[in-house]
Image (cartoon, rainbow, N blue to C red; front, side, top):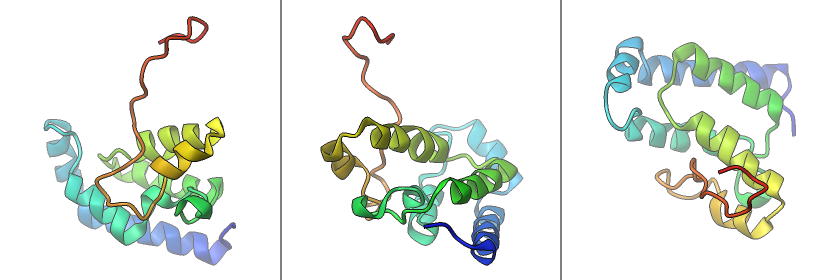
Length: 135
């Protein structure tokens, strides 16, 4: 499913308004010096209100099933706001790696967007014992 131009504008505006309210420059600077380097409450709100973790997850795994165009809009806005959150590590890297693996069982276990906001795809993968793949 791909959103039309109006849908893309609405997505951009929703994400921008949320980030302007929840991720102002002062908050970003403070988070850059803290541990964890993101606000779990804001990440949970992004999951609950905007469903960002499930944006490009296929509907069969509980996501919204949008594509790369919509992901690009969200990435532009998170970059614009310098969002301190595990969005890129989880939604772009980990979730897309799981999907590319073709392991339907692993996808079903780790990807459902309806899970509590605290659970997300792993952003760190275990080192492999395969000598052909560097750790």
